[in-house]
Image (cartoon, rainbow, N blue to C red; front, side):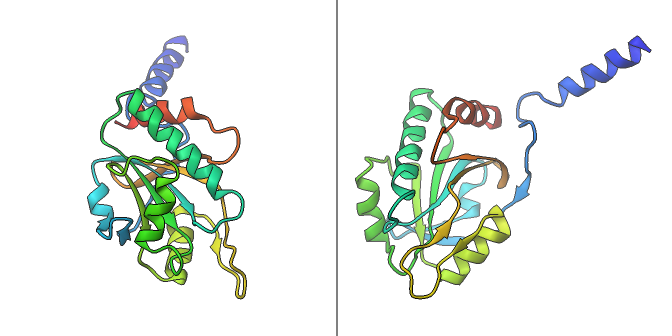
Length: 188
């Protein structure tokens, strides 16, 4: 009996080796092609083979998006300090009628982001991003009629090299930066 338990323990521990995230969601992201802040197309295919972190923000947000973007910029800086390569950051605008590529670029400059590996996406209809967010990220995005504010969650999503969401973290309060960096390294 002891030998069987020992074998099961070894098999169980080996499953948590490099490249695996404990409790991974494994939510696949459907193919997409959107416009980034530099007016270039960015698709899921462009991100294949790279680990990436995503969030949903908009530039006229009165409360949570500013600290979320600040926290994502901090995460980008930490990834640089840790010499993590092959990492991308993707912010989906959830107010595409307002957030043109130019508006997104001006917004991002406020946070001193490095555009080499951070894309702010737009170029879709409101209904499209709402459906995309729900279908792929299992998150609510909703712009009520006659209201400039957009309802949304405040998560950071970790996506693996195959385009599957592995984990989500708070992007607003008590951000587990060390855990996110560790998880990024695990997926490299």
